[in-house]
Image (cartoon, rainbow, N blue to C red; front, side, top):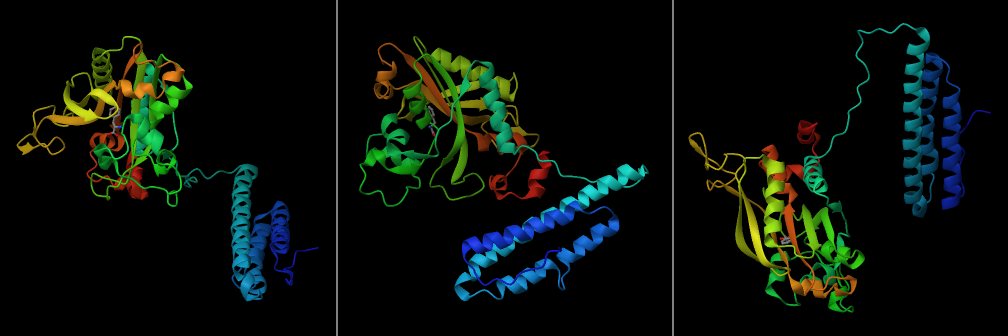
Length: 371
Ligand code: PHE
């Protein structure tokens, strides 16, 4: 017997689910009976017609008849039924179209085909994969960790003592209502990927070589070069006798692999609580080739200096190893280096995009350019 929309008296969740299930089920069975274009039209009209189509009736009978307190639940059900029915009808139309071309044997090759948009990697993710790939070829494996992190992993075990001023440069969002917990257990959105250094060393004994891609958060209002959420790639290598020379050689190789064999690297002293000594790595500007000029114009990306800062790095501070001594990281026996870079900024430079916000607005007109 053909399906008709029942009156509802019981608006409980169970009753609504049963009614919705019967309706969608009926639609599926009818879709399976479609044999011709005429069937398809009749089927479509029966369900979708504005005037008195089944979806319209459901709206009228179920929703308008619902008691006030059940309106919201009923509304959600009706919307669910609508989406499901529209999907079924879309599929029936697609199958009909394919069948009619296949059975008639007459394909009009002058007609345009059905074009389905193909997804593509987001430029930031693509850049991430490229960078991770360079290190994988050097024997690094990939590690990941949680974005909601404890104060212990994000700060304390990385040698940021409570109240240390270096914490100010990495202000972030803290999860509310945790005053009762000891500070080290309080949750926050991680400000860098460095906590995964500790998490990995707790699980894996030395030697290790890992890269850690992921999102991080800071209290930076969005503008052309800042975003409260951005992406980093961290690196960590620990073994016996790792030296600053290994750090320099590894990063010099990686920069040449990423930006071309003619780039030069340059290390300047810096400070991070979890590395000692620490440095910032600069590469010759890959936009102007290091000259600071583009023809008669000044080069903007490197602010005419010919150098671009790409990452922070350094030798793992022995104080950090103290936190993971139990898994074999005795600071007297092992040494290591670490580095961390911002992927979004590299993607900006690489693709010549002038506003970071484009990466996160999800506007297809922007994203389509990277197909
Ligand atoms: N975590 C640092 C930052 O976010 C970068 C860094 C990583 C520096 C590893 C040194 C070693 O700024």
